[in-house]
Length: 373
Image 1 (cartoon, one colour):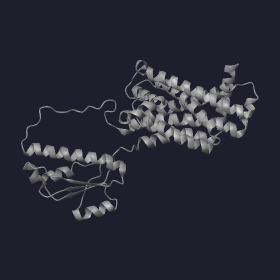
Image 2 (image 1 turned 90 degrees about the horizontal axis):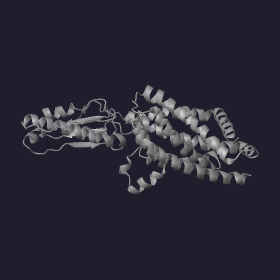
Image 3 (image 1 turned 45 degrees about the vertical axis):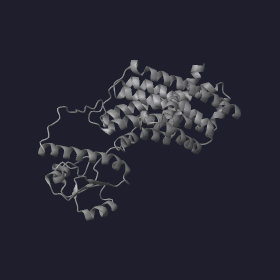
Image 4 (image 1 turned 90 degrees about the vertical axis):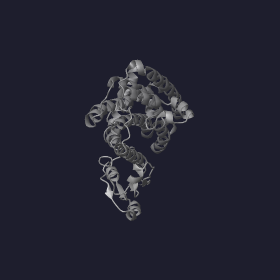
């Protein structure tokens, strides 16, 4: 009877979700437009940045530098005078302004070390941070190539050949699509589970369940499997139609294995959502708690910033978070084609963390049910 109760209550949760149009809109948006828009507009992507060049040298090397900037990373450079540079930067017309001084080529061929001034509009933070590195690299390569040709410097016998694995074209959208999918799985599983509990309380149906021959364990388990099923089905749909279909991201590993890991992750996060639902007394309170919980889970799990660049204390603490292991598992499977023999420790950690969160949330749920009774 316990399994039958869990199944029946889970079907009731699915019917309640179907009758909630705003939740349905949120699910569809989160696994379609939200992923596509965020992945194709990654903040570290340099795209069509405006650059102007003050060429005071008028030499072949300065012309070579100006010709090295072209789409899609930069707009065609605009030749300007030194007097126009500050005004254009103040007006926001240019993100970068490159000033090549007089006699630059002469000093270069004479063996001196001339300098080029690069002015950056740092109010455009994402493009300024990434683009300044692009500009320095482009200028350095063009100057080095020119110097080797005209000074007859021998070409080094050792040449560095860069080979990018897993993402040979270095497309940020490939990385962004997977990371956004992971973020949406985490967010939706917490939101759906917590909202289901709060909806029961607000509609007064939780009291009706308490007079029926069902236990808090059955009620909570039904919410977990029902909301987990919705998130997993939406994830499979997103991978097939949005990530692989619309965006053309190649999936290297097994999608069923990824969904199995996602199921363990959703088991943990839905339990977390139910716990937050027992703490919050209304939907606005739940939304505020969600911000406090969701942002650290997403920012410190290794999806946005490599864990190796974080303080050691943060790395150790975040090992207790399910998102840390899920991000590592998802990257290994979807990027590098890892199999079960590689990711089973991460799946085991997700199962352990999920079990602990489920037990903790169940204890809290029983306390809240006892107060109602």
